Length: 483
Image (cartoon, rainbow, N blue to C red; front, side):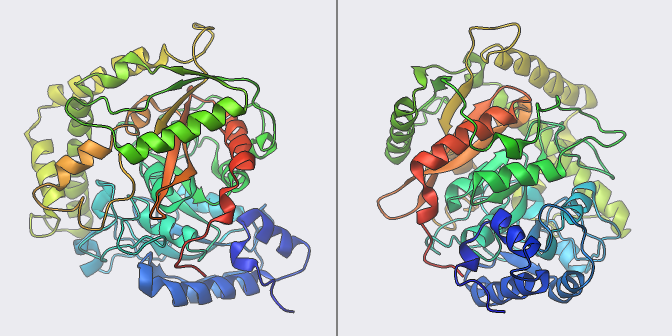
């Protein structure tokens, strides 16, 4: 049978419905996605490990009867493993070792149980420690809206693949903004779940002191909701537990959020950093739209968000974990990982991480915990009935930057700090936060707006995101490089 002419533009929910109704087969969907990847990926370098023949065999066989049966999907090549497939985590040394994973991680198992067919793995910066996808190991991923610009990171390969219509959705993960930033720069929906909502195991249940979360990047709010439903839920031994949701997130799509009390932060809090004019335009548009929808808007944000100690504590945790990563991979490979094996940025992090004493590391952890408690007092909860429902901010203090600007060996780290003003705070607090593609610059680059809810309140984000999606209809925009 002939495939629908609009197939690449259909979201994962619509593609799954085609399979359920017998209008197309899983094999046809997978073959069509592979053809798009083969045609588009040379321009974008989003998919670095092809899994085409395995995917074809799985699609032709008996797939689990999950909500996304037969839909092609991509996994990010960072921490999440898939049995029998390459796993490089953005590193040259794992690439040179031709490292192959000996397991599926929990989230991979859940993606498979949902019926998704994994057609490949996507590009990521080395160890996910920066917000642009330009690893030395696999080369630069390029933004389908303009290939001179960054995709964001660390889920940049996944975001480029979804934005260019290679696949309708892809796995992403977020330790400091790595779902929301690529979603912002590629014009997608990107929700970082509440800490503990999606398991990280089996090898670990805690990364970056509870800051990292698994999720997805998609083009529609309903896909984000239903995919999170498919992968959420605790596993025995998890280090953290998220509060139970009132029901499936998919049921929240289209449900009225009511009139919400929304605080807005429209400027960086780091001393000496000026607000980008384009980001001011983006946040003004978002505020105007929210007001039109009947929400109460106030100029307010958690006072603790601007605490000058935040960056030092967060960097301490990342540096310690990078040092541990190098030691752990050295044990796995049976040799020491040295400075010639990793990029300069991560060797610097590892060197810093090894310089701390154990008490100093714990000082950073305890500071983050106390700071998170101060942050939580701003949101509405049982202890603060007059608090705010939502915080609205830019995702970044910049539109997508040009490739090379953030990876500059001298200026890059300072530039990352200057534009990454709004996301990492909510990795540390563990709160859910979503990026929505509400604005485009004059030269056609997407800009995301971040909405943050109280701990455990993904359902409120989905309701509000769905309302904004109906009002804004970003689906009409498509990038120049696409399937």
